[in-house]
Image 1 (cartoon, rainbow, N blue to C red):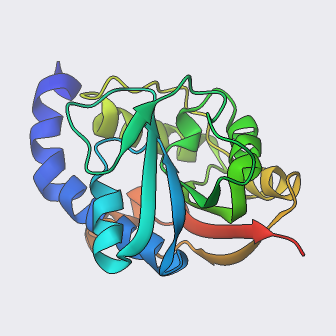
Image 2 (cartoon, rainbow, N blue to C red; image 1 turned 90 degrees about the horizontal axis):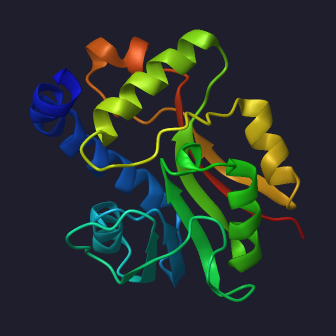
Length: 204
């Protein structure tokens, strides 16, 4: 009852609205001015729209497994496993807090690498300790309870992220853990060491 009714009322004005603006700014800084982008797990497309405000030359296509009433970008449903596109169909594939909701983040990364020409840009979490996992799980429940999103808590450590990208010959060429998602008072608990935005491109 607390998650379902009370917390979402406070979460949107106090956390969510600022959070989408901050994430969009970081993602836009790591994407090119022009190009074809596939956003997997696009939700209502709000973050993509904010990125387009900064990088209007991008062309977005969204994919989702949970249908929303509306979406700010062209979107279609898919099975959550196989991306329904030919190899190298997009310049970049993007994910915003999506991979830890998948059955296998590593398998989804392999699929993204297959359909990408240049690489992957993502925002996700870092989990190094049981306490990290507990905090991340709590945040996910608060942020997603009203959307019917699967919550398997498949969080990866820094080493696991590195191994997953190295397995598909993607190298990290832009990265930050200093995002500024939350008010300074709560950052030591809910932000520091738990979030990152990164760009991974194919090795040449």
